[in-house]
Length: 66
Image 1 (cartoon, helix red, strand yellow):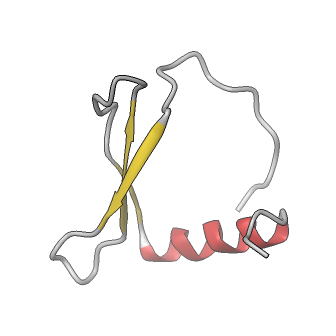
Image 2: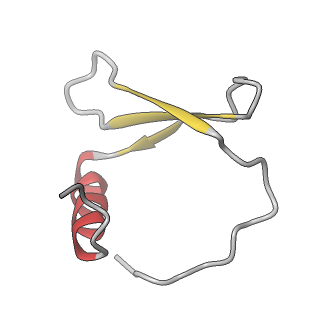
């Protein structure tokens, strides 16, 4: 996984998100970002392997909770 800082892209900004899972045991974590008014922007599915990378990044960057 490449870890680098990026400038925020010119796209809709998410003010909140919902996390959920589906009934497929091989699927990953579903994230649904929402605009300030609560309308969804899209659905992002993070696969199980990528989720491990995300958790490692959170830990490596000190973003995990104390």
